[in-house]
Length: 429
Image (cartoon, rainbow, N blue to C red):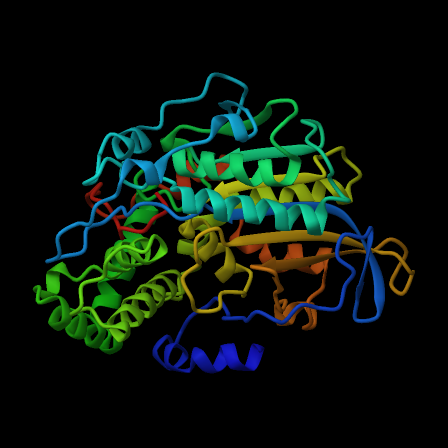
């Protein structure tokens, strides 16, 4: 499978020379016993000691219109909630203060599409996907964390209704609809680090604008834009790959009409083009962009691994509910991006495993990263395979970390002037 995935990227590899982040691949599942305290990997037994999960929300209504095409009807019934059948939440700020206002989210939920559904709203289909993810996580890890306990489970979401609701449903699938309220933390827009925050990190906005402009001049990008311009019968300037993909994928997820002149090949073109855009921007050869996009979240994830190694008392399970733009830079940093845009309800698990047989030094810790039910091949620095010694994993990724005390300085703009225009209209918002 790894070879096949690399083959799919042959075009991108030739186009994306000079990248400093190494493109990896996703390996098939290793042999293991699901739902058991010890797992068998390459013939040896390992014991799970800590788990962190990061996932994208389920299917939602679109954030972007399809250029030159009337919007379809998004019936209000598609966006209904089921509060009596889902686990109750207690949402606070990171410090326990009342939940902050999410200005971006407030604007989206007040923008109604034809039919009555708000823009970017989690749908019934999205709730189904989230529930299925929760059931999968319960099947795989329910023995490790069988019920919610605030001392052993940490829950964080971006301050966006669709990610909060997705997390609620995922945890309902895992822990059931009855029981104590689940404590979820979030933060104000200006402090958010669970997605690339171009609005409140000026330097990140600068770098992404530079990357987007460079991409727009790329021969492969120009060809994609030309073909989509012809299909949609709109000027080149109206061909926004991420927005077009967003609208098409949202329609397809809910069985909505795709105009007959938009062929299956055009849909694939938009999908591939959007993924290519993100890959090229984030792998533009500038590690600074990766650090600003995902380094703060990465720091949280790695710091928790360090705390476990140091014997500190940390939650056994940490959950982050985010967006496609949460997952893409993380996958690139982990050398695990498969070249495809993360589907709705995509998920990453970071497992901290302990040698249970003594084949390595006593009690040595290893990291395994999983993406959408498959083990990720670890970087070459780890020696290949699906396991990486914890110390090697930390050493390999430290250069991408951004500590809280570094963020304000790192985000200062370098240009003479700073435009706060929206950068690259991805979902991660």
